[in-house]
Length: 244
Image (cartoon, rainbow, N blue to C red; front, side, top):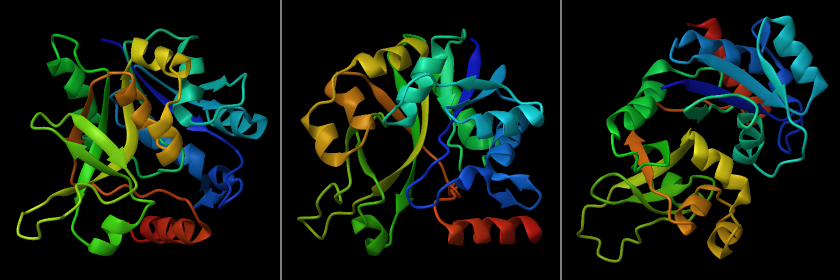
């Protein structure tokens, strides 16, 4: 089973333009993410997938692999789907470009999902961790996911689901962590699948797989994702590295 990591890397970001090229203790954010992903030792090959010549130059100057996107894309899954057509691989993991502290354990867990899925029923795997703080639960930026008894996804929402109508029932709230692992064909099919009402309403790409009948498996992880979405996040990341 050939396992590939792809890191979609868009130069412009609404909240923090050119964040991937910002300096993080002597290296750019995207270079640290690339090196952390390679450093897990889990992948046959790691690619940065970008439409930016600046990012391409940055990664190649540090000895990395780059695939240039030919089209404009609405989401990272669209971008790496285009790239996946160019290279062979059985399992493709989408690692976020703004997560320079990428760890081996969650990625290893995702790969294990497919190794254990001998009947090849799972199309997509991803990660969740539990939330207990109500302010975190009701925050629409935290994507909630409801799971069945086999940890397969029933639904994603920005709203707090399940709704706690009975306060006496012990409810677990799961936050979705947006690292996706795909079987190759599921990823190639993604851009061809029509966006339906629920995805368009929630603006959550994972819903597209559900609306088209694909099975998604979630793995609960204790590891918090440290992403860089704002200048404040970058300062926190600098502090972590300086005190490591």
